[in-house]
Length: 121
Image (cartoon, rainbow, N blue to C red; front, side):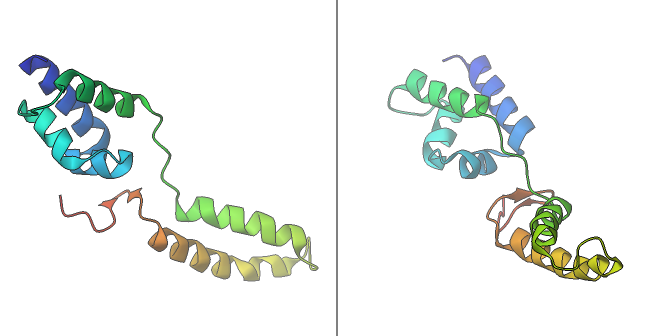
């Protein structure tokens, strides 16, 4: 693997994930291996590991859920079972759905707009 190929791989990781650390968290690849491959110091089969990294980069990245998206899902399912359908009272449940959606987002160990929860990189 050439220096240019390693640099291109590192650039693609940074472009998509912001850092190698976030890439590793999102894909489950070992951080040590990824950093060693990107620096050219991996002692094992460099080509095999580079192919694993490329394969992980090609996988579709799951979209990050939003409070609004989760709230709409909660509302859709709750309103489908509600006895007070099509009444003006439905708006009173919106704060509950929003609060629930925010709690769900806080529980997710996924990348959000501000980075990964607990990420210091």
